[in-house]
Length: 192
Image 1 (cartoon, rainbow, N blue to C red):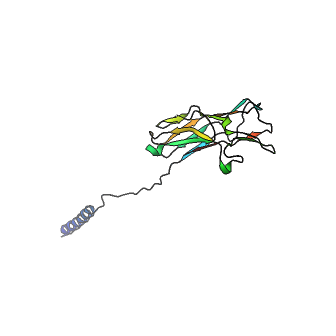
Image 2: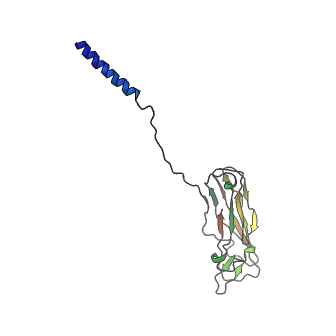
Image 3: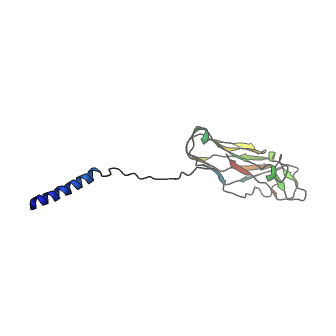
């Protein structure tokens, strides 16, 4: 009898174990969540202020200056038409220009301000160091009247990319320029 009781207990335990294994969970899912950071397109220029040389410069001469590095960073990871961008440079127009917006250039601090027109100012893009794929095109040398293309990236590339160049400007001082130093100008880089 004792054997039958032990056998029944053993059989019951075996049935419990087997029935538990038959209904055991064989998969278990874990859900992960992430937030994707939307990429950006930006431009930065290292020199917030710059001086032209020679300083001072005589009427009829040319003064030149460097901006430092101009850097476009495209982290949008786009392809095709979405990968294209154009960096422009020029003199602010409209409300940003405290002088005649059609000739916005350099202006002096005299009581009756004198100007050096934007047509007397040239921009030189220079060569860029680039990352990513696609065609990068320099704007070359152009008169800033009032703006022009500094650099661009075509639709033939995709993914993140960047371009870094060291632009310069030259200002042809009119022979009839009047004193009233300093002459100042705001030059704006933008990218879209």
